[in-house]
Length: 563
Image 1 (cartoon, rainbow, N blue to C red):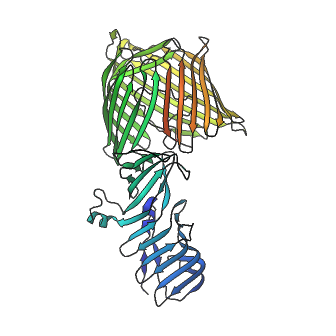
Image 2: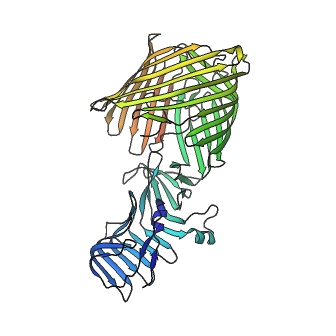
Image 3: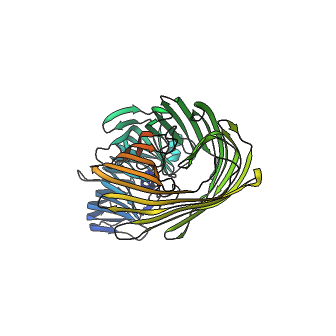
């Protein structure tokens, strides 16, 4: 009997991109028993009952049937293979499903039908999960139609860079929530999978629980390579003593090689503000970006245009950026009694960052260097153009010290800065070291911050000052999914608490609502109230207009590699 080549690449291409081939040959015996074993290059069928009819060319496995080839496995109650038509069918019992797996990746469905000649197939009632961001995207649908890429091109379904297959999923629900009734979901009539590249949901409807919110004017794109969602809407509310009360919306949309974002905000004092930015990948290593914003300036009590442009490089975790930026608003608390507020032009600035090097099990180290020309603008003074060169190192240490999970950590940065104006130089060393620990269900953090500075800058915006502060954090649960937290810092030199944060969080398996109040007790006295929503799978999102909630200092550096 001739070889029958069974190309099951479709299983992999659907979601996981693990191409494999299964061969069945010389099925010329009438076998009936528990399994049908072929040589190492062939299919292996296991089940409670396995039979092969040599006259009809049909193989049948029933009762906990398993089809194996290498690391690839099909599990179903019943698996049928027709050698004459080269079709495969896998069926499940009621309330059970067919499972297609390869290693630790899988897709489940009610039924699998596949034509080995045309290499087209249908998965009925499938669902799966994709690794995206720091979480999982769960996908449910009616059926998947898999089409070879060349046929999809002939039918006008795709264009552009070629792939192996196109998988089209109908009547789909997407969410990062694990519950049967998710807290939020996106529902689309169709979703297309481009193998190894992206998942595209066509203009989905957005639901909060079962409450319909709106229909998206854009496609929802999941970049598999980046493990990121390239379309999102981030609403927020905030009150600031300077800007007033208001809120905003950040809308971002992406494509395979780039992304764009529009930010719109309104507050009672600052009125309407908006910003736009776009990023486009030129090749594997280079990206260009640009944009502008029309936003409020606390010091001048008016709005100003702030354009920027950048060329970025990334290879093997080495990063570089050439940045031009005009009228950047800088607000930096130097210590409890000194704060810089002003505008800064970077004309331009070039910075290089090394990868994070793990020098031991608990220690990471990275380096940076920068050179730029700057013009700072104060309310009653515009400085002179100043050239600055600097380099430094950033180290992070973390270890568990006992069986209760107490973590000792230390975040340290050292840098040297040289200036052409007045031939000045400035050196700085900052340490933030302490413990993260638990007592019962209460989470604590205690740390000491110390900044040492030597020399003097030729400018005001990057000037360092000696500073000593003690930081404390506490977080505890007050009900199912609800938490209260407080964190603050005490200025040891000035003998007073300079800032305190209070917050209430609603944390579900898929999203976090955060209502917070910042009591700014420095001379600037800029108190803030805010309400934000974030999806737990995507904890990192760009800052939005007026939304400047301070980063929790007890968290590791944002770009530190995951353990």
